[in-house]
Amino acid sequence: MPGTITAFPNFDVEKDCNELRSAMKGLGTNEAKIINILGNRNLEQRLEIASQFKVIFGKDLISELKSELSSNFLRLCTNMILTTPQFLAKEMKRAIKGSGTDERALIEILVGLDNKGIQDLRHAYKQMFSTEVERDVVGETSGSFKKLAVSLLQGKRDESEEVDIELAKEDAEELFNAGINRFGTDESNPEMPVGLFNNKLLTKRYETVFNRILVTRSYRHLKMVFAEYKRRVKRDLDKDIEKLVSWKRNYQVLQQTVDVTNAIVAENGNKIASEDIEKSIKSEMSGDIELGFLSIVKKIKNCPTYFAEELYKSMKGLGTDDDQLIRIVVWRSEIDLVEIKGAFESLYGKTLADFIKEDTSGDFRALLLLIVK
Image (cartoon, rainbow, N blue to C red; front, side):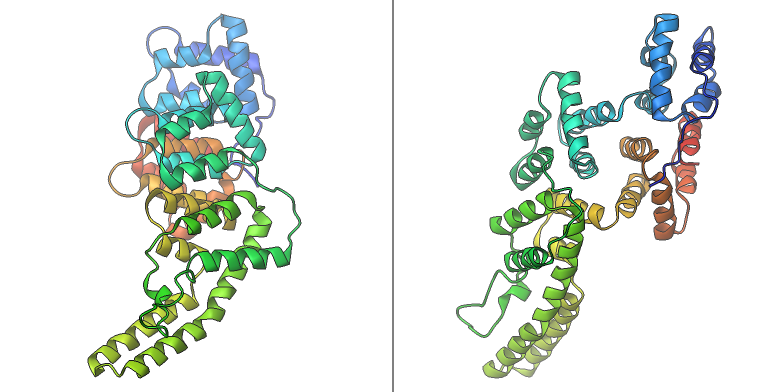
């Protein structure tokens, strides 16, 4: 998957170091020079610049930038000269330190990494903060979300390309039975299928089943599971509607109640017939755990679309979540930002660059636009 930043041709590390030094030397700062260099060099080249800068001038490039720049522009520049594991470890620390936890940032990072990426993150976090990331996550999260985060931090997902169709069907059936179909019937009205009317009830079993399957199965396998799940839910529709109609007829309720029941039948019939795994999660869960499982599913279904939606959320409404905007743009700039841009425009009818122009300003905006180009 293509990124927007590629290796700069005829790269001259010493020349770039001298340009950056001159941009920060004396009175005033030449932000345009900094933007031009950082926005047109890939990560490998930027890291080489940072290393060579210290050799030539005996000064740390990040420290020099901190003495000359400020605010979002400073954070964007300094994050661009960290390795990806260092950058994401820093973001993890920011997400869980202090009062309140940024669950969206935490889960976005964890679902966006493969097994090696998770292990690299753990190693970088330990080096940078002298503690285990898992220990910090456990201390700052709770409940089902904590279990999901800890599971993802193990980095034990099956990454094989093979798909066992029968196992996919079994997984889909297990998800279905743990969720939509888990309530059975109302004992006082044996013919009444109450599952359709109790989707907001949560159970530990439901979360455990989802946690195990969504965290450990391969992406290709889970795409098959999601397709099988949707087919399984559709097959169950006729049976449930039949029970509802039978219940209505057997109890001889008033016409007003009959009309209400008819409406419920139609409403739930339409809902269940089109229900996929995302809708099931939304109907069965809430809060951080809903966010966590939805993020996994969306990322597996379509990675560029997932990050496009997250970018939109970072800029919609009043104010901008600058941390999220920086994180996604920098992180994905050499991975799949071209595809994310395409997905963004398809979803929202405007380019990512147009959104950035409207929601940011100054040197911060200029560098972001150069990255997303």
